Image (cartoon, rainbow, N blue to C red; front, side, top):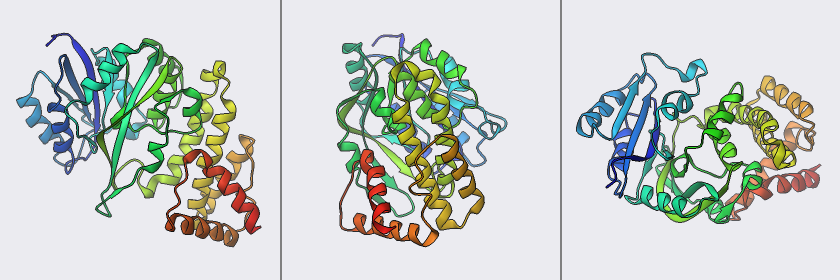
Length: 335
C-alpha cells in the first residue's frame, strides 16, 4: 500500500450517538491499495458522540483524525466541511459521509478511485444508495435515482440535486475551493460544492449500492425544517447563478427554484404559516418565477395535494424533472 494519502474522508457529526459507530465502522472496513484518512468535525455534541469517536481515534490513530469543537459552529453560520475538514485534507480525492449515514461496501473507496484515476474528464463520482426511514423503521424505494443516467453534467444538476452526500467522491481541486470561498452566505453547502465541481468535469454514477442515507427527525432535512430549508436552497441557487454564468444554465436554476418554493409553499399552506407563505410569495416575485401554484386558494391547493397523494398511492413513480410539469397540469385541472 502507498503511504501517501489518496483519499480524505470528510465527516461532520452532531449528536449522532445512535448512529456514529455504524458510520465509523463503514470507514475503517474499507479495503484499498492506497492510504486514506478520516477527518471528523464534531460540532460540540451534547450526547456521547465525541466519546465514541475518541474510542475509534485511539484504536485507529493513523486513520481517524477528529476535531472536537468547544461550541457549536454550525449555529454560528460557519461552513463546517470547508472550514474544518477540506482545509486539512491531504488526499488527491475527497469522499464525504455525515455521521448519521454509513457505507456498506468495503470496496467503495477503491471503486471510486479506480474510476476517477482512469477518467480525467470526470470531476465527481457517486453511486446508488439505500434510504432508511428511522421513524417508520422501513426502507424506502429509491426509484427516481435509478432513472438518472450513468453520466450527467452541470446542466442536469442545475435542474435539481440528485446526489447523496454519502455517495460522493470528487477531486481535491483548488479551483473548486476558490469558487466556494468566493460565494457569500453559504447555507446547505453540499449542493454548492456539487455544482462547483461539475463546472470542471462530468458526473459518474456507479451502479453499485454502497451506502445508506438515513432519514430521521434530528436530521438537517427533517420534516420540521423542510420548508425553511427549501427556501434557503432557493436563495442559494440564486447566489450560484453568477459563478456558473459561462454554462448558460440560469433557466435550469430557475426551474429548480420554482420546484423548491412550490414545495415550501405547500408546507406553509398545510401548516397555516402565513409569514412563511408571504416570504415565498415575495421570492417568486423577486426571482420572476411563474405563479401557477400561488394563484390557488387554500382549499384548491389542498385538493391538488390530495390528487398527488392518490397518484402516489396507486404506485406511479415520476422522475423528479417532470414533477413541476405535473403540478402545473393539475393546477389547470382543478382551477
